Image (cartoon, rainbow, N blue to C red; front, side, top):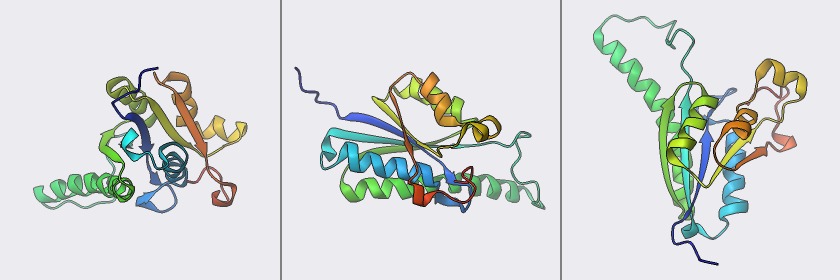
Length: 177
């Protein structure tokens, strides 16, 4: 058996907390990231590269700032910059963790529908493994909420590992994250 010289590339999609908002990571993506470091990377930091990316969901009308008042062209630039900064702050949290333990990483932001964008990024980047957080919703909740992880398990063109939240981390409404 030949030993690989290239590090194993593990992609982890990260998103903001539905409860706390930016720059806080969701419970499930933080758990998936931590699990990846603890159970896959362990102390073999040079054997792995973590690929982190955030998908920013665009509102149906493509406009997030419905309650904002704009009085100058700079207001629009500031809005675009603040939305971009939200994703950057979220990624910064994960990149810092990777650097603290010495594992290589890359991080980037995309816009769109998370399930579609994740599968597109898998096709583009070709990671060895995709790790996703899962809220562990029941059948009834899945019908109304839908799950990105279930879609990616079915459609992503690489092995997919879903990590459920710990029971003690689950909010009163399991759809919250």
